[in-house]
Length: 476
Image (cartoon, rainbow, N blue to C red):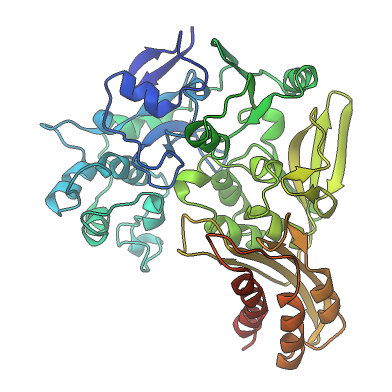
C-alpha cells in the first residue's frame, strides 16, 4: 500500500490521482497550514519538511524543506513529512513558532506556516554552530549560526523581513529530548518502488535504471521527473498532464558522486544542495552558480540532470558547465555515451538526447582553470530567473591569457559558448586594454531578444560589463 507518514501518522495514497501534488494532498487531509501562493515554487507558502538522507552523504536523516506545491504526492510514497501543524500546536508552540509570534514575525499569517517549516529545517540542521564555535557571522548568519538563505524562498509582504530575521537569530538549539531532532539519529526512509494509476495518468518510480530505460523505450512520450521543480509548474499553471510519469530522482545509478585528480562525476539526480555539500568548494564555479540558483527550497529538489534536460536557454547550470568544458553521460537500453555539453544543445529546448535516453551523470575535467566566476544578472539576487548568465574559466600564465572558456545563458535560443570572445582573449595580456577590447566582442555575442525580464540592448550591455567586472574583481 502506498502511503506517506505525515506528522507521525500514515496517510493512504490509494486512489489519489497521480498528478496531485503534496500540497493538495495535505490540504485534502485537513492540514491547511501550508498554502498555495504562486503555485510555481517562488513564494514558499507551501513549504513542508521531509526526512531525507543527509546532503553530505552520511547515513543520518536530515530535515529538508521543500515546496509541496511542486512535488507529486506519489513522489513521497514511504517518506516522512512534517508540516507546521506537526511542529507545534497553539498550546505548545515550537521554538520557531514562539519566536515568530513574540517578535512580530507574523501578521496576516498566510505565509507563516511556510516560514515555520523553512526555519524549522534550519533549526534542526546538524552542523549549525554558534559564531564563536566556528560558525560564520555576517549579514546572512546570526550568532546562533542560523543561515538566512534558509528562507530565501519564502516571501512576506506584511511584516517585512526584519522581525522574521530577529526571530531566526534568536533561536537556540534543539533540546536533547526533542522528538523531531532525535529523528535525525536514524537513517531516512529508503526510496520506494511506486506505481500509482489514475484515469488520466500513471506515476511510476522504477526500482532500477534498467527498468526506467525499458519504460522510456516503450513510451517515447513519457515524462521524466526528478525534483519536479520544472514539471510541477507546468502541471499547476499550464494544466499539463503526462500519460506516463517516470520518477528517476532516487535511482542509485543517477546518484553517484566521485572526485579524482582527473575529473568530478556528479549524478544527474543528486539535488543541487547535495552536490554543493559534497563538492565542498572543489569546483568554485559550480558552487557559485548553485548559490544563485533559485532558493534553497528549490535547490533542495532541483537537479543538474533536470536543468540540462529541459534545454532552457536561461537555465543557470549550463553557462557555468560550458565554461568548465563539462560532458554529459547519456544512457539508453542500448548502452551509454558521453557527449561534450558544448555539443549537447541544438536549439530552443532541443538537444541531441534521444527520447529513449536519460542523463545519468555530469562530468567536469580537472584540474579546473585558476580564474573562474559566475555572473547572474537578475532583478533580485536570490530566487529569480536570470536575464543574463555568464560562466568564466580562464588560465592566466605570467599575466597572459593562455586559455579562455566562457559560457552564456539568456542571450540566444540555447546556452552557448562565447567563442569570439575566447579567441579575443587567448594569447593576449590580461590588461584593461585587452578586457576593453574583449568587452566589445562579448557584447555582440549571441542573438539576445527583448522580453519581460530585459531588453536585447540591456542584455548586450550586461555582457560587456560582465567581463569588466571579472577583471576588476580578479585584479589587485
